[in-house]
Length: 325
Image 1 (cartoon, rainbow, N blue to C red):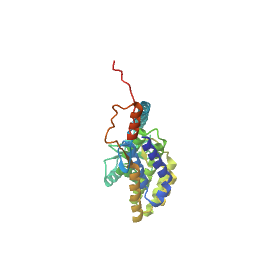
Image 2 (image 1 turned 90 degrees about the horizontal axis):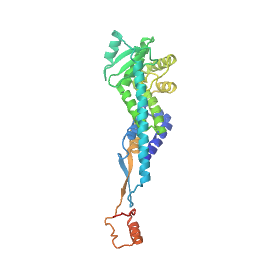
Image 3 (image 1 turned 90 degrees about the vertical axis):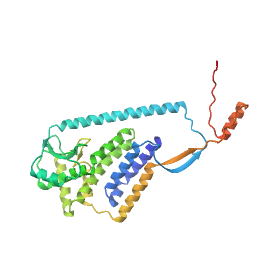
Image 4 (image 1 turned 30 degrees about the vertical axis):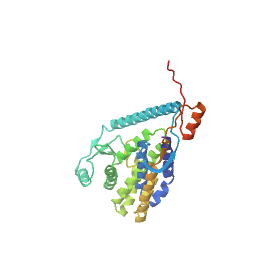
């Protein structure tokens, strides 16, 4: 477990340090999937992996009672901590759903027309609520778009609804729950909390990139202005929300204005980078213990002779005396 946590920590720090370089040459979707790969690795047992290096030794592992007891205590601490984190998350979810009890369904020909023209993916509805300050989407099985009880012009409504609909189409709520589960299970690793923070930001950047792909180049400026205008009116909140203002505003607007199509060379490099990270995350060293084929005969040997023979044959051993009375 320690090896897995150390490897994951180094990968998280490396990706966090290289995010700016990745954004310069690749799509924002690349960092998003890098985080997801690490999250998958953190949720799988350490024994699962792809053997890439094989080594052998001639000593049979023999854990002592003290180390086994320490590992048992560490496992209990990890389990209790994970349960506590899950309870805190559950309390936040219940509090959020309590705030959402007072919301009004938006109806009208314009709303129904927009939903019909963007019906790809799960069925969803659009609501308005005074309890929220940012447009957001929530609900895993039945997605709902919730808008603040404010006035927007037609173009702003188009951009905001398109962004939230893109979250539903991309399955971002499921991704967020998955990453939060990975972090909750590995709550004791500070790098995992850094990964969750950066994942939320990169997920918003990737969603913006998908929105911009559906817009004309001339509309990119209007989308950025809508984002800035909404930010002046509201503040992000909630832990299980995926909202229009999630992520760093400056970073998002910069990515919107510098949006460009990936070249074929960049796509090939991205595939190669994902493959390298996949091997780094799921690769493991396969260690095999070599046990002598023939067990040495100790009958008639003195204690020093038996110890010397066992050491020469590569055995680890302990002596115990059994009282037969």
